[in-house]
Length: 121
Length: 213
Image (cartoon, rainbow over all chains, first blue to last red):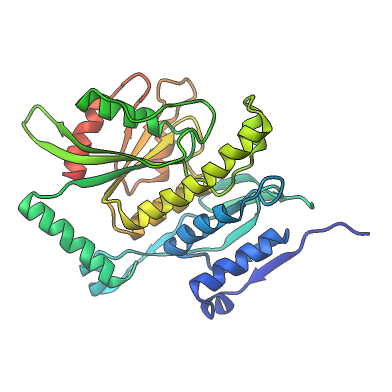
């Protein structure tokens, strides 16, 4: 049987239709099944925070050991007058790769290049 | 963070500044083994004569957030701040108990440590969302600052509009390269210290008064 790793590339449009919790659940379900998820547009900081928290709840000895996640540093977008008034920064999230920590390893990363290595289970 | 929360936080900061009331809660965040507890102990020891928690070379020694209330830091100009220091567990996206067995822990102890560490990380994230007014983000200056967890955490802190000081720690080690940290986060003030040896911590206190006061 051919060994391989499933890779799911999720478009920005599809992500936009999901709520934050649906996004996080989708990512965790895929990754816990051993798949690699590539998001065309990454998570918001709030979603990242929740993803870390929920990942911790799913970790089990000799089972799921967490996620490896790589993205580029966010670019800050202009938020307009009201956003500036309220102190809101709106960084644009960028292409993001997420996989099981025991299968996805980062080889090299800088501001404009992510090089990763994926192993099958 | 929704607009109401942001307005409430700004208003609360304004009131605190205006009436000089209330204490600012400063969280010490960063990846595991960056030296968070060493710095927390140094701050608390320097200004209260006490200590906050044990340190260890094994990652995730701190698995519960620890808070020390009412630490007053002052400078020679007579300026001061009174803060609560919150030492938090190291933030990560993965925890494997096998890592701890490599440090000589028995499997049972390693599994327990891993379980407590996962709870600790979740708790640290919760503190950041709800109960922190400013952040000292600790980085080991011998490691790559572009690690994903740092990018994510700094993004989360920025999105919450919290004042942040980035600390390039362990500059006493030969491989330390604090300039890499400055280039990774040019939008934030970065200070190089050795929490272990106390190098440059006076400058850190000065920056804390300026940044969090």
